[in-house]
Amino acid sequence: MKAWPLGYGRRVFEEIDSTLNEAARIAPTLAGPEWIMAYHQTAGRGRRGRVWKNPRGNFSSTLVLRPEGPPEQAALRSFVAALALFDAFVAVTGRADGLSLKWPNDVLLNGGKIAGILLESAGNGGGVTHLAVGIGVNLIAGPPEDILEQRATRPVSLLGETGLKIEPEDFLLELALSFDKYETQLRTYGFEPIRTAWLARAAKLGEVITARTATSETVGTFETVDADGNLVLNTAKGRVSIPAADVYF
Image (cartoon, rainbow, N blue to C red; front, side):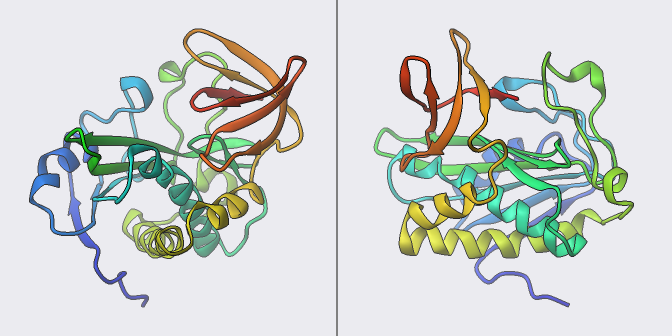
C-alpha cells in the first residue's frame, strides 16, 4: 500500500455541497495543503459558475494550497494538476495510450473529456492567500448531455473506455502522490520543466484549433504554450498569445 504524501492533509466526505465551497470555508484555518474529497456533491460547479452534476462513483476533489508568488504564478498549478492527473490515470490503468492534455484545464482519453480542472483563488491585495484546485474525473460516467455547452468536447468515462472500475479514494491517493511530485518540481526548478512535460502530452499540438473568449474567436495552428502558460497560435495575422479561452478542435 502506497503511503499518503507527507505534509498534505486529507478530508473525505460522504456528501457535501461542493468541495470548492468547503475549501473556501477551511482555507483560513489551514497550516498546510489539504485535499478534500466528496463521494457526492449537492452543489457542484464548473467553469464560469456552470452547474456541474457528477454521478456518484465519479471523483470530486479540491486541493487547497497557500502558493508563493504572484497570482499568475499560482495559476500555473493548472498545468501541475493536469500532469498529476495524467500520471494518476497511468498508475490506475497501467497504460498511457489514448491520454492527452487539452489546454487549459482538461484531460482527454481517446479524444473525449475524462477530467477537468477549475482554479479558484482568494487574495489580500498583495498576492494569493489561498488557491483551490478543483478536480472532477469521470470514473464511471460522463455528465448529462443537457448541462454541456454547445461544441463541448464529448465526455467519456474511465469505466466506459477501459472497463476498469476505480474507487474514488484509490484514485485520490495516486493523484495526491503525483501532484506532490510535480508541485515539488515547480517550486524547485520553476515552470519550464512543467511546460516541457505538459507539451509532450498536449492534444492537437501542431494542428489547427479554435480559441474562443466571450468577445472573440481565434483560429490558428497550436504552436506552443509560452513561459507564462499562455496558448500560442500561429494565425493568418501572425503569432497570437492567448491567456484564457475555451479551446475547440
